Amino acid sequence: MQQTFDLPANVLSAVDYFKAKLQFENSPAWVHENLKLSSVVVLDVRDRNAYAREHIPGSLNIPLEDIPRKAASLPKDKTIVCYCGKSTSTLASKAALELAHR
Image (cartoon, rainbow, N blue to C red; front, side, top):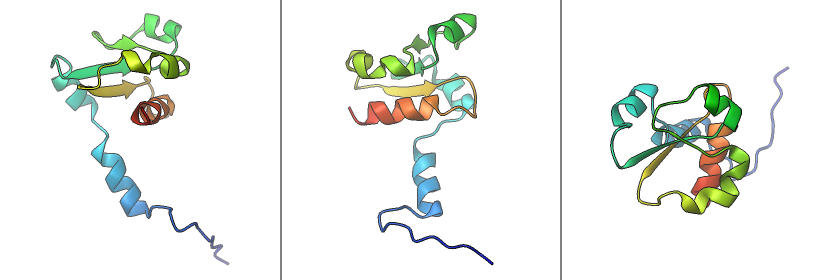
């Protein structure tokens, strides 16, 4: 028997969700091509130890837990690309959401 759920009226459909999501995602190739542009900031949101072990050259490191305190130091006139090193991690998404609220 198929289970159904009553969803709140404000929940996006799967199609709308993925359309919106894709508007704000960039591929690794896009980041590589645009990394040297002065209009792009690559923000590594992993902890300092992970950043010290390896990171994208030219990226900034602000660990996720420091974003609320340091968000004001990031330029508002540039595209900020958050990353966390693993495609299965939610750190970059959480950081992007935090920055979007500012």
